[in-house]
Amino acid sequence: MVLWGAGAAWCPQLQRKKDHIWEFKYLLAQRSSISGDIELHTTPWSSCECLFDDDKRAVEFKEKFQKCEKSLMKMTNLSTHLEEKCSGVIQLKAHVLDLKFTIVTPQYRQLILDADTSLECILASLPMIIYSGCAKCGLELQTDENKIYKQCLNCLPFNKVRKFYRPALVTAEDKGCEICIQVVSELMEKIFLNIPADWLNRFIVPSSDTTYGMIVADLCHSLLADAEASYLLDIRSHFVLDENSYPLQQDFFLLDFHSDL
Image (tube, rainbow, N blue to C red):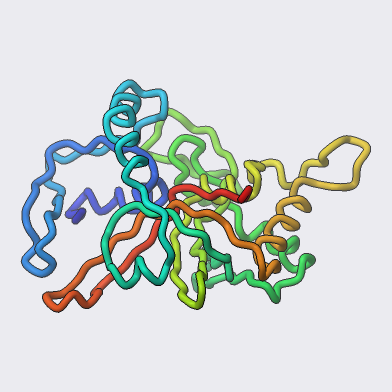
């Protein structure tokens, strides 16, 4: 999709909610002169809406298309998939080498957690891998000079704020082959056993000294430190090839994560 004019403002929301169902209206479809793929271009009349899971349109879409998609999902290994260079939805078993988070600072730096990162360091880094955002769309919200969160203009009059895990870039390895997979906030929460980012400072039970943040740090450390552990990943891949089938671009997006192999 190519965003023009006012449509460019959609980009942050689309990036954060790639695994959600969206309704777009009044787009222009045309074939790319470079890749040959069909592209969707926004127009001055275009609109977009992220659909909730219980929205009638989302339910009907899932019933019609997602069942078919799951039946077409195939189990493969990374080497074969990279050799075939076919876009689609696959399942593979892989080891997680590292997690990369983009931290919003004046310089925009990257936080990297890997097998050499200690449990104590991961625990201390948790405040950097979460953010406060609009509870409806997930847009990260900044504060004003009075430390009051600015409103999400796209979701007014809705004004609730909650914490989210930052999207991550996961390096996955399978028999010597490595790829970087984009993981959205909701799936980061699933990887951390569905512990909400809002809960990290809470005690598990009132009489305990253990917080949910300690549990998340331990989960993250185990995910990275165990060299023998592998996980079943559902991945959507997208390849852009030149006329000689050389990949000009390859993107991978995590659709689901299964820890109980």
